[in-house]
Image (spheres, rainbow, N blue to C red):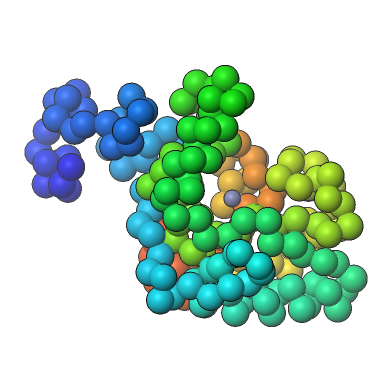
Length: 202
Ligand SMILES: [Zn+2]
């Protein structure tokens, strides 16, 4: 759906004209381009990705900042573990549909906790899921907010240009994810996440 078409047609007609963007999912995008709350994101170029942990890569700008942040945290006795970083759309598709089926979730339920393929911040190479090495049971759980790692991130992450993507009650309507942080320390990264900011401001 082009911008011109989106502007030229009223919502019901626009919805009728645009096919569902993700195969296997009936949901259609809203006027601001979101699908079940999530904004569309392109995939990072492989040339821009560098490893930050075994099997985990980020865009080089985010990687550099993350490594500096991990070093600073370690100096304060906090060990930030990379649980998930760059995810290609193919892996996101698997995560979305396989777990949706395993947990017997509707697309809407699943979308509250995971982005549909093509709509994940992880595919940009700028988003990372972090854990606390000393509290492995809190990984990818809201309990992460009770860890020293989370307290450290809240106090220091902004210094490294990392921000919590989905705070409690976020305007996107995505479940609170205290472990999911995105890098906004370059013009390119900031531009990618501008639609999310605009929504938060409105
Ligand atoms: Zn995440």
